[in-house]
Image (tube, rainbow, N blue to C red; front, side, top):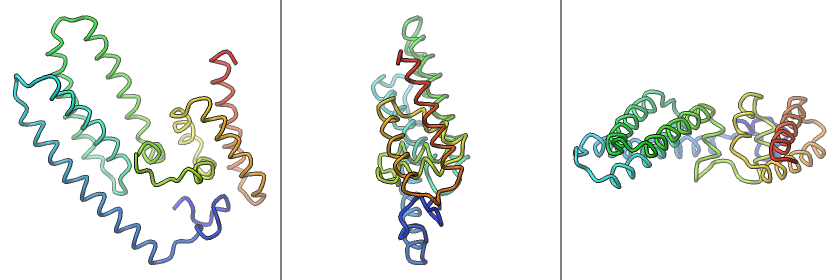
Length: 210
């Protein structure tokens, strides 16, 4: 929908005819069905973990739960209840990992830092654009990235910028600047987003000593 009547995107992609809409809905439905099947499988694995389960099995399951949370955040339908269930399962798994760490202070501190990082990552995933960009099968093509970021809201863009490093941001800033230069009909909000990218890039450069 971000392309609709948006001059930042190619003219041929600014309208959504009935056939393209139906195809998009079909693909969304297939993705949702595949996710639900995988989610039920993960739940079955989690509730059948043995108290003496090998740590490798537990950690592998935790990683799959994290990935499932990312995927749920990018689905077309609201998945708040599913994400809440995944967070609870992850908490259960993390409790098992902590028990396995025993009194190992170093291991416990690493787990604490991991949980802080996960919480921050999950907050970013509240923004659909972040989830789309992190999806291995992202619906956003590389040649659409500049237009997509310039079309984002201020708060959403600020969240998105945090997933790029300085070199990537520098390229994005150049691409976005060129896009605006050849799109005089672009809305003022797009120019504000370009300024926002520039400020973020300058802040990163300053933090890294230029």
